[in-house]
Length: 370
Picture (cartoon, rainbow, N blue to C red):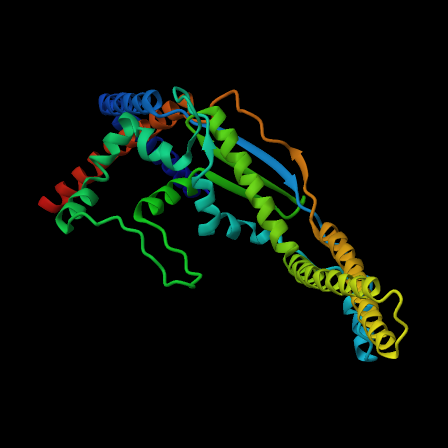
């Protein structure tokens, strides 16, 4: 029992000695820690001061939900019995989980590049593409990053030679999309500024955009919201719209045929008011039959046209806007105090690591020499 107590006391003394030794090492290297902390604090202060301002605008909406099939769980039983209940259910729209695919599609992004923006100092609105091509400046930090981290890439590009920025022309009649190198760079920039959040639990969708100016951020967000809604609506009503166009074309054709037959019948009646010959009566009956047939077809198509127009309106989804787009008042970036705190903490951590690393590698060097 006595030996156990002695062992416990020895371990406690060793732990205390280790802690004291660590504290002593840290105290002896306090200058290194302070210098490293001050250097990193200055770096954080520099970044916080010269980081460009960004304003973030956002909107939240609830997409239209699709009703459940009227058949419900009876669909499986009905199918086993040979009964088809497929027509009793509503058609499903595009899933919110696919909204990011819409946002990231080339046609969507090309339309966003043409968004008119209100920029301070400009007499009229300019497009997003014009702003980042001719007006926007990367700022001091942007230039430093370009000529430090981005310097190897610039050297490689210089060695390879400048790539000619040309527009590829797809084959006539092809549905392939071609973009320029400049548009590709703008799309990369746009992807860093547009964000989409789909909340499956609560069933809402949030769209946000950040820009160097508050008004421009709100306008870009509004454009992204309107485009997203339009793409979803077009997808949902595509089938019924194509059917409406088909009926509209047939209605126009039959309307012209009906008017033509109507004029022929009226002209024949005017020219043969006092003629009672069998041939005249036969021609009148033939024209009357053609008129009746044309009228029935024309009248039926008119009914179908009206019904299909109502169907398109019914298929058009309605979005509930929970949070409309508003012009942000406060900037979202940079958070200067947080930047300084993070860099200061990083400086303290690295300073302490330097002190203990020096002792550690010094011990290894002594053992190696022995």
